[in-house]
Image (tube, rainbow, N blue to C red; front, top):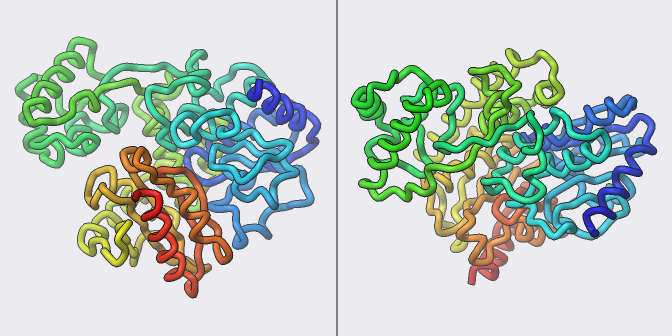
Length: 432
């Protein structure tokens, strides 16, 4: 009943708007949710405009045309003093209710694991125009924000369409575009000793199975795929790998071109992140709504991968500081503020840093410090809530918030030490 009332208020309001401005975040979930809403409004006969922002705070407030009808996607609930009279479709932890706010937490859902902003946007879109090919971007956004797989509940609604196909197989990244030997080399979640990071061993493993090392996972026929899966799982089991984490459900967009990142939902999300994180969100929106911008996006993806590799190398060489008891601290020298959170996430998921406490990564920009926090679900189960911690620690001098397992803040130079001390106290209280 709460769901029906909430979605009806939002859809009724969207029908009333003449030529609204869609305002979204620049990550994969922000671009997919923004693109879904932009395209939906177009199909309704409206003439929306699009604005993508890397954050919604004092540094970007003047970029927003507040005198227009606005539709916020993937943020807005944490900035309710500004946004409360506009449409908000968000899955981040809200501050309070608002008339046209469709937020996962008020639906009894966990915004970190149950549904993404793109999933919520698709539910609204479906109410307005019915099922559509926008189901694909809904799942792509979920993969970008690491919604729990297999998708469940409302997050499975896009799977009711022909635009998304759920598959069973290895969950490792690169099934569509990476040669299978490269997919094996970069297998990290879970890590496979003797395979991960060992290209010669990957080639040897594939030769023994008589599988072409240059083919991709998706191009294996059914027999080859079964043989490969069984052999890799048997090998990993002998090495003590938790093999139940290797296999599972993943998602393919069958109408997208074979051999491109756009066909696999996880790879598509990385492609979109490359667009948004490197100052070209309009290319990401173009991908979502079907514009011919793939070649431009690929160029950004190459830049994205190079900078991520450089950033991870900096973290490994420089290491983290143990100044604070309750988190590891990485102060980046060269990592862009837009990707420092991705570096932190890779570091803690790959156990490059101590996974027994959250990591806080800092990167300086012209306004001060971009702060990104990442944890693990195991830490969340013990009480960690980075979003609430960021909000509390930045109160009075900064902007902070997000999810329990991942969140961020923007803090000035003069306040950063105070912020980190507060954060340490809050984490200590949460994880006592």
